[in-house]
Amino acid sequence: MQYSFYYIKGKVLQGLRTHFVSRPEVKVLAYAINIFALISVILYWLKKIRPQAFLLCSFLWIMLLIIFWFVMPNVIYKKAIQIFQDKFIANFNDDGVILENDRGAITWEWQRFTNYFESSNFFHLYFNARSFFLFPKDEMTDDFKQALKALLSQKLRKGKY
Image (tube, rainbow, N blue to C red; front, side):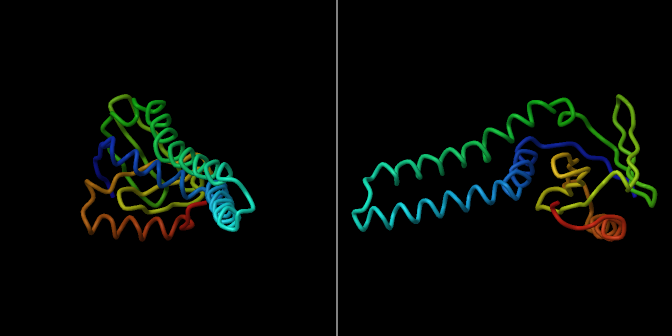
């Protein structure tokens, strides 16, 4: 199965956001901040603490949002901008994935990947918990998507990590 694709910046940033906010450590951090916020609201309402604790929690929540929703995706995009500006041809077969562009080709056997995850715009193929490759779904037909899902399900574990 073969298809050509290119990246659209806005969709890549959304795919990177999906990766970051679904990380277990980010979820734990978000839950901890939410619990802290709830406790600070209750304690403030009971007049046990001053408003600074609630304001601190609000500040932490806003910083978390800014870092994981805006800063980190843009930093990763800028580091890999040359990749995201290329046009690729991907070939999926029983042995693995062959990825080609104007500068060359690379072959990844299925054993190199640990798992895959499907988001609204991409198939995320993970090499490990922090390293992955995005395959855009824009240029895929519905039949291609179904065939690729079947192949990925056969070769890789489905899940984010």
